[in-house]
Length: 266
Image (cartoon, rainbow, N blue to C red; front, side):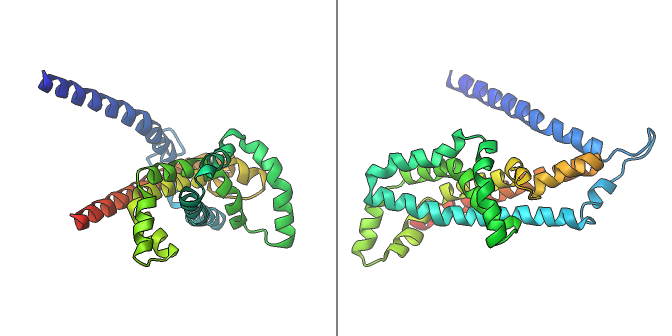
């Protein structure tokens, strides 16, 4: 009976994986077919849509800006949110719920409403500080808060940070050592998951950048779609593939570090 249940479970998992794989891969296959389609009916397949992406300097600038925004937003999120969450759990446990409410609030506000509040702020920033697209980092930090908070909160809940911090402090470790060498390595999977979510949100964001007149990756794809649909679809395919492999690499790195830490403990 147990073997029969295992076989049924394995068959069910295989069916789910196949259905989900088709659900995600068929649209991408259709996009590749469209991007490689020739001009005429009997024209051969061509990769000109993919090769022409690097020849457009504005498009390259938009891709570079999106990658820089992803890096800056991830770094800013970890620098602001992670120490604050750990400090509140150690020193102000009564503020855990209010902080959770504050971090989840952006999830309930539509992006178009957020832009209404961001517009005068960014107008002032553009006049007095800089008109660089990297200034979107501040808006994206607010946008990724609900997702990254949940990931970090799950990691902190799985670790007894109070015991770890008290033990490290009793041995003479400073708060910086406790944070970055004791607590963070024990929740590395949660940190990587938060970075995964942050990168995915930033690389897929369109509304805020478009309404604030910035050109990131998604805005560039939208603009290309009005003039050259094949290049736009090719860029969308490359962005999907890049995000997939990037997220896969981060996931693999997080698992590798977790296994290495477990082996060192053993």
